[in-house]
Each structure stands twice: as structure tokens, then as C-alpha cells.
Image 1 (spheres, helix red, strand yellow):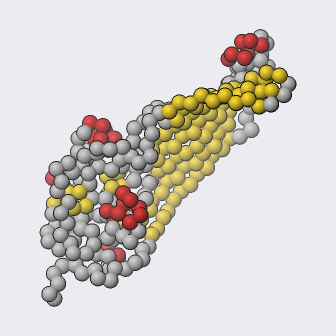
Image 2: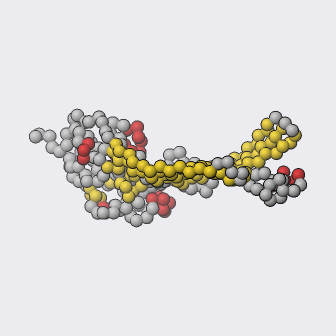
Image 3: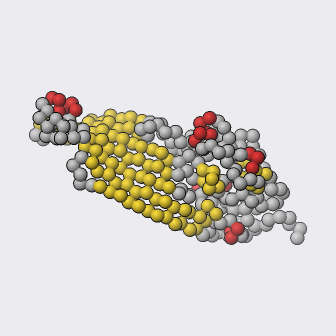
Length: 268
């Protein structure tokens, strides 16, 4: 009785998770001019500890349980929940050139310039991961204290990408409150409605082979990574009580702007 509030001297070093998904695969191969393959996943991932003792998850260590010896009250969305993911690749052999649909009788020099090109692309579209919100000055002796949520919609109604690009807060600050000394907050570990920037990436390439002689070929390739130069922002300030709470000030780890390469390869 002399210890107020939570006492997690013996944390439960275990966790349970549940993953449900619908997975679709689509493919068209063997075509003379066009082929593609890809997959789509619709999923939901829940658990009762995405971090806890597993703090190597980086961004997601804030999702550690508040009461580590009572994980039954921590069940909710997982740090790794990404409801939608679409990924694939397609290749188009342009029907322009000698012996092809357009320009079948094209002369050798014109064919060398514009004939026989192929275009390929890989693309990934994925939902952003959910955000955890902690306390700037937690007052919980054990566990990771979370704030109280006082309204139904803790967001500001604009997308995370728009908020980060304009410098506006992504969270509705008035929707959060301090739960008090040694009290558990009612906020979930991760918010389904508050998510980081998703992945929207497309890489593309153009390729052509020149037959210089019978056993000598020259292959030229142009490659563009992050073709549309889509910016992906990193984690916002997610500690309730700090002045910049809800503001994003950095790019996501691993993000790279558009890069273009030209490659020449001789086979002999």
C-alpha cells in the first residue's frame, strides 16, 4: 500500500499478435509487347506489445505498454499495421522499329535511333504506419505513460503529407490531456486515424540494344529512381506537452530524392 499507482517490478516478457489479410496476385507474361506482374495486400495487424522489451523497433518504442504486467489491457493496433500495399512491375516493348508494328521497313539509321526501345517500371504504394503518442513529462513509475484522449477525432482533418509540407500541426492539440501522476492514459498505443506518410514510389527505365557486329552488342539504359520525386516525411513530434507537438521537421529514414543514371554496356 505504500506504493502509489502502477508497480511493474515483474514485467511480462511476452506478447501476442494477430494478423489477417487478403492477398491477391496478378500476372501477364509472354506478351510480345506488354507484360506485368504484381500483388495487392489488404490487412489488419493487432498485438498487445509492438515494442516493450523489443526497443530495436526504433520509431515504435513509444508503443511500449503502460502496465507491462497486464498486457490484456494493451491489445490494439500494431506498430507494423499497413492496411494496403500494392507493388508490381511492368515492361513495355515499344512496337516501333524495323520488323515491328510501326516502321517495319525503317532504314537502319532511323531504326538505330528510335527503334527497339523498351520501357519498364516498378511501383510501390503502401499505407503509412500508425503513430504512437507519448508524454513529454511522463509521471508513471513503470511503463510508458500515454495521454488521455478527450475527443473522437484527434487529427486536424488534413493529410499528414500536407501538414508536414506546410508546417502545420497534424494533431488536434485540444484533444489530449495529462492523465495525472501515476495514472494510465486512455490513448491507444497506436492511432489508426493518425498515420505517417505512406510509400508512393515509382522507378522507371528505358533500354535499347545495338548490334554493332555479329558478336558485339551495345546496350544503353536510362534509369530514374523515385521518378516523380515524391517526398516522404518522417515522424512528427509526438510527445504531448512539447511546444512543437504534432509538427514534422524531418524526412523519413532512407528517403532519397529523384536520381537519374545512364548506363552503357558492351557484350562481346
